[in-house]
Image 1 (cartoon, rainbow, N blue to C red):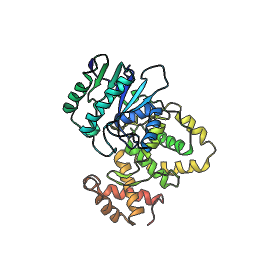
Image 2: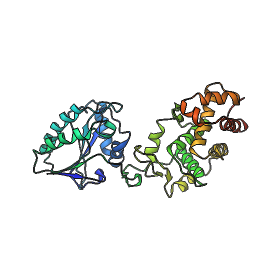
Image 3: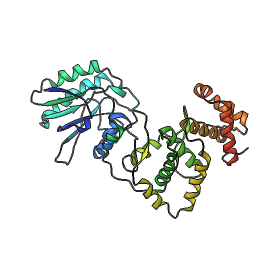
Image 4: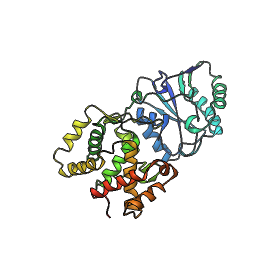
Length: 343
């Protein structure tokens, strides 16, 4: 019997839950990232199978949990070959055929299904829904709970079952910067976290973050991997990248960071250097401004205020409209006064 449900699919009390996946081992955002955080052992098995090219459209990758409570099975359903690609309707159609066989083989009596290939996948729910109904109507003994497109659950309600990571120097420094930035009561967006990481690395900390010139200033995609690892353990509010994040620290994160850095003089100096630079610039606009001016000054040969204005306003049309010359000049002066750029 088919039921239409709302709410958090990951919390469904069913024997099997379907996770829509690509074939290259990436669960980077949306419901896939929620699955990665809630069922890390499934992600490990899935990523290994992808490397062995065992995950292919039209074939379910079944993960059986060693757990007495539901869900017993995570059924990874490929709807696209690559995470950058859009889902294909033929992959959904072929996959539903195999899904029916898996349900029969494993004698699954209840299952929760997301909107296959819709959302980030780009398929039309009005087309996909009848396909699900047609495929599973032939299984009257199975309770099927279909979750149509809906907003993601609140970020703090998303389950995180990953192993608590060790405190490291880089994590401790990030936590301390977030603490100091948040003290005046400012909200902390992902844009601001990106810029904090940028300046910490530019101060000499070997974070191995791959910053590139991006729409909103310097940006490192691999910083998201760092945040995903500490989400639910040292920070909260990161979510699944499907909505704007508001980052907060977990209650004991600062104490752990302080203990780790207690005798690290070099770390304290770097923190002080970054904190002094960003004082008075603690807003998303100002942090983007400061990082963008620093980028053109250190990567594009800018050595004076007028050149900085030209380069930043020439970055893209957004910055040309948003970033005023007097603000760019002020940011350049701060960077010069604190010896972050050479003139």
